[in-house]
Picture 1 (cartoon, rainbow, N blue to C red):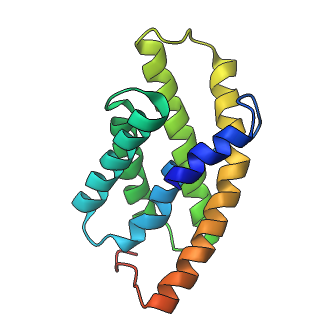
Picture 2: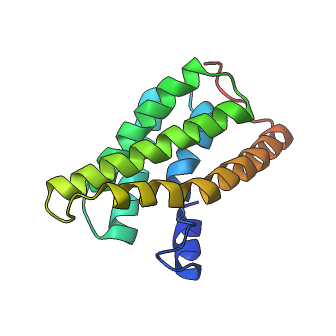
Picture 3: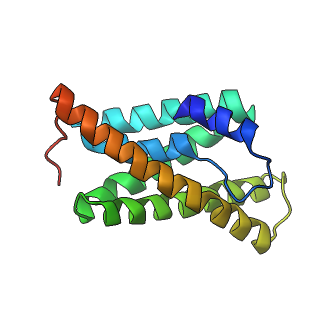
Length: 156
């Protein structure tokens, strides 16, 4: 997912309606395989920090946002059943939260002027491709976990 983010971003133009957040979405898929939330949170900070360094050239910015989104994912995963509708709802919530938090931090630091249209475009441009990706990634993960005998944690 991390490498696919960069590859996909290079193929499509920046103003496309398909904006990948594959690394963020992969946090939703891997959550059930962590039996300990603290390890999951550490993983999310690591992935966010790597995302910062490789794709955005900032430090800790996305690490903190990924941690907040991981917390939201962990809470929502305990509220919902383990099915595709729940997966889509958690994905939508994660994308909206991610885009809102990152936009507000960019506005607060003076890197962007406040514009609701920019925020809404950022949200809707991320939804389609990331929902398709999370469904495909979930199918592949379920297939591989059954084939390899990897079980989800019993938090559901």
